[in-house]
Image (cartoon, rainbow, N blue to C red; front, side, top):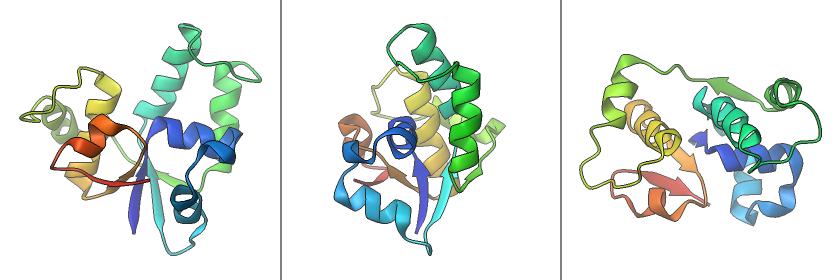
Length: 130
């Protein structure tokens, strides 16, 4: 399975697997699954840390470097197609730019999103695993 990690799934995979569902943990461990990470996730970590909505055990840039090194995921580019698609999601009312980019990335690259986000899961065009 080709899986895009939502930002919280990436964070929890690096910091606390107890926050992940059993299905999510299994999917992350399954060697036949291909894991992907959008550059929007490190950006979102920086934004959350700056707003003090996320507490990290080190400076945000150092945390990101360590989390990227520990995550066997392929980086997906933010392309023009992804950017345009992030604003062309009929019926998707979530204004969060990170979530919109993740949904668009999953759609453009035909990926399942590993997320517990109910808004993403409720949108009919997205496949979600949790």
